[in-house]
Length: 541
Figure 1 (cartoon, one colour):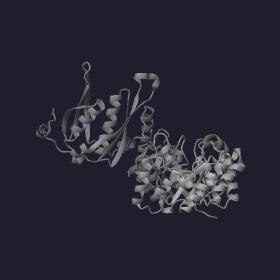
Figure 2: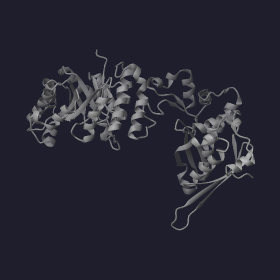
Figure 3: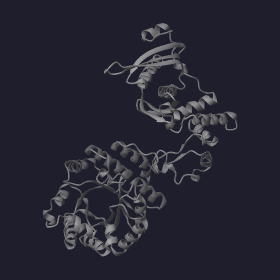
């Protein structure tokens, strides 16, 4: 039995047909390089001649000198009434310089007569002539049988006849397409199995996800004998998307024993997924299987207790096999196992036999009842943990803060924040303006701390989220503010604040963010003198 399944990636062509997906030529080249590093067998770059962007890609991709993947073009069979030799589409494929091509033809008789407006016999000739022409010019030809499963269900004899034309003309692959994405796994298995028995030409599968079954259908096809899977990274594609290669690869490779990419490259799966999301400017969904941030996240205390003993109790694979990591969440559902795991993760010594652990868990439950959430604010959680264990010392303390907002007539509003802190043995009183109250507070707080910690100027906010906690209370509702901060863009951390007052909740999250950034640096705080404060323009009281 052939245990190799060839991955045919069409992210750069079919994937870009998805709503909200737009890739420049440079983007496509970056993704092609990443796909080659992952180890896919084919990278479909686009449709030569359909637009200048795709033609430029085929010209420039040669400079990448890909080591593993074969770049393919995409196109259709010749037009009816035109010879293959005279067809502009086929000639542009040759001019692209590729060594492999996927051309699609109609398998559903309904499409032939209604969409193409030609005869069934002419469609068969179009398939044969196109494959023959491309093979005579030295190309590897993947024949994409468009709407094959719908066509087979409507008229199996004609659908198989279209494959026969491609096979007899020399096609290297027969890729069966569930173009409308409406087939079910048992249908795919039965039909692919028949095709594999009747044709010596290797079979591929190309599924769309309209029934959320693209991965399941592709697995069924491989089980029935298909040896090529066409899909996209993260399932990008028209309507509901295509087969997600990020899911199909580990299912085939780790669970069914097929080789889809070099074994040592499987650990690049998470990185590849997130890289493509980044290039496409899309936030990765936390719940994505295998590679999502939550794919190996554990929250329930009993679950965590079990995975500490044996990870396979609640994990279907090892996260590191696909380049992901295990995470343990701390919440009102937590037990001591969660706390112990997080402490070990943070290199904090915690004795679960002592009362401090139980007290911290009770504190977390009380805080979450008030609206706090530590799953997405791990920096605030670490501060809470260290404070509960008595191994945290404030680098600064807050005496007061004030925000003033003014607006006169049609003029722009102005916002000013005043902050009074104790830093390095001195009271530091600063004033700063900002684009809104949160920005003004951030600027004033940073200005105060820069006296003792000049490098705090390199820290900045990268995300700010506000969540209303009790909608029935309308404007009197409590809000939860999550702040994400970074220093030089190299590391990031998240903090949380809760209050009926959005400014107070934001301030609380900001304070935690600064405390986390300065944690353990008490000894670095300067013993500020009044003269030093005055030279920096900061008021001393």
